[in-house]
Image (cartoon, rainbow, N blue to C red; front, side, top):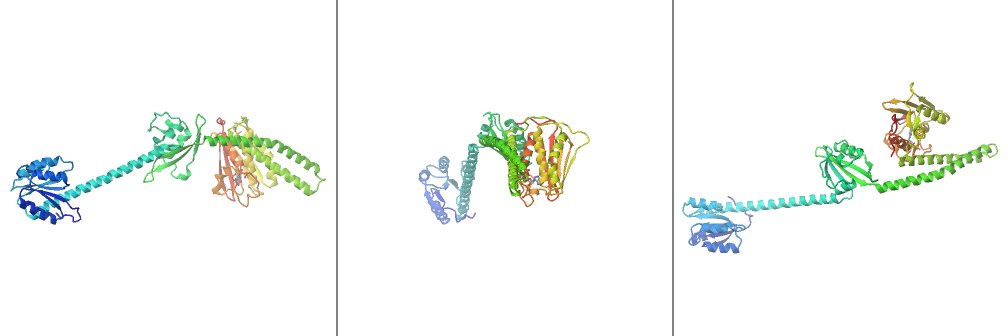
Amino acid sequence: MAVNSSMDETRVLVVDDERDIRDGSERILTRLGCHVKKASRGDEALTILTQESVSIVLLDLKMPGMDGMEVLKHLKEMESPPLVIVITGYATVETAIEAMKRGAYDFIAKPFEPDQLRIVVGRAREKLRLTREAERLNQVRQRMLFDLDTEKSRTRTIIESLPNGIVVTNAEGRVVLMNPAFSWQLNLDGQIGTGEHIATYVNDEGFCDLVIDISKGKHSETGDIPTYEFALPDDKYLLARGRPIMGEDRECLGAVVVLSDITAMKVLDRLKSEFVATVSHELRSPLSTIHEQLALVLRDLVGEASTKELHILSRAKEKTEGLISLIGDLLDLSRIETGAVCHEPKPVHLEDLLKSIFDFLGAKAESKGQNLNLDLPKAPLPCLTADPLVLESVFGNLIVNAINYTPDGGEIRVKADVCGQNVRVRVKDTGYGIPEAYLDKVFDKFFRVQNERTRHTTGTGLGLSIVKGFLAGMGGSITVESTPDVGTTFTVMIPVGGSPPSR
Ligand code: ADP
C-alpha cells in the first residue's frame, strides 16, 4: 500500500533480540520516512515507551527474558497504546493469531523481505492516519454541536429575557413555545406548560381567532395581518401582532405572536379624549351664541350695511358654523372612544328618521341642482333600538358627503331594505368617486382625498371615522364601493336585534 508522502514522521520502535532484524528494519523504515528506535529486550522496550511517544511497535514475540506476549500485555494497559505489529518466528501462525487476539494490530513472519515490511508498516501508518482523521472529524462535530447548543441556548435566553410576551403555536393552534413575559402578562399559572390549545391560555375569542387564522396560513402575506387589541380583567391592555411561520415549501407551520403592554398608551389616550371632550364642550356654547348673534345682526342689518360689511359678517357666520360642526365631530369621536355610543337607546323608525334628514338636507341638494331620492320598501322596516342622535349623525354624514362630492345636477339615491337579520341602507351617488387606493383609508381619522375636485369642499376628515365608530358600537358595519367619475355607494348594515352592550 502506498504511504502518503505528506504523512507526519511516524515514530516506530523495533523490539527484537536479533540485531540483524533491528538494523535491517531501521534501514528500511528510515527510508520510508519513519523515526526509528530500537530495543533488544522487552523491559528495555517498556522503558522507552514510558519516556517517548511511539505510534508503531514492531515486536518480536520470542525474546529471552520478558517475551513479546508479556510486553503486549503491558502495552494494553497504556493510556493510548501504540499499534503493535508482531514478528513471529518461522511460520508460527497460531502464535500470531493469539497475539492479534490480545490486541496486536498485524503480524509479519520471519524471515521477511523489505517489501513485506514496507507493506505491513504502510498499512499500520494508514490505519493511524485514518484514526487521526476520525478523531479530528469527531472533534469538529463536537465543536459544531457545542456551537449549535450555545446558539440555541443564547436564542432561548434572549427570548426568555424579552419584556414582550411571545407565544408560538403550531398549525393546529397549539402552543409550542411561550416566554415568561407571556405567562406574566396573562397572569397564567406558573405550572401551566406548553402543548395545549391557545384558548386554554388566553380567554379572549378575538385573540384566539386571530392566532388560529395565522397558524392555519390564512395570512400568508405578512402585510395584510391585522393587529388585535384586547383588555384583561385587571384593566391591562395588550396589543397582539402575529406572523405566520413558513416552511421550506411555503406551507404554514404555525404562528408567532408578540404581545405588547399598551396600558399606559390607553390611559394617555383616554386622558386626551377627556381633554378634547371637555374643551369642545366648553367651546360649543359660546360659539353657538356667537353664531346666533351673528345671524341676528345679519338679519337686522339687511338694507342698512354695505354689501362688503354684510359679506364679512356672513363669512364670520360660516366660519362659526364650521367650528361648531368640528366641535360636534370631536364630541362624537370622544363618545365613540369612551364607548358611550348608545347614550339613550329607544325604538327608532328608520323611515321617519331618513325622511326628516331628507327634509333638512333637501335645500342643500336643491342648491346644487341635485336629485335626492329615497327608496323605501312597501312593508315597514323593523323598528331599531338605537340612539336616534347617533343614527342621525350616521346618515346625515353619509348624505352630506354624497351631496358634497357629487357635481351639480348629479343624483343621490338612498335605499333602505331588510337583508337577513339587518336593516340595510345604501347611499349611492353619481359623484367624483374615490380612487381604489383610498377606499379603506377614507374611514381613518382626518383622512381626506386630496385632489382638484375635493379641494373646494371644506371638511375635517372626521365624518366617516365617526360613522364607522358609531356603527361598530351598535354591532353594525359599513362598506364602500366606488368608481372614479361614476359614483360611490356606501352600504350600512344595522342588526335588528339591537346593539350589543357598549364597552
Ligand atoms: P370630510 O367629508 O369632512 O372630508 P369624511 O370622513 O366624511 O370627511 O370623508 C373623508 C373623505 O372621503 C372625504 O374628504 C372625501 O375625499 C371622501 N369621500 C367621502 N364620501 C365621499 C363620496 N360620497 N364620494 C366621494 N368621496 C367621498
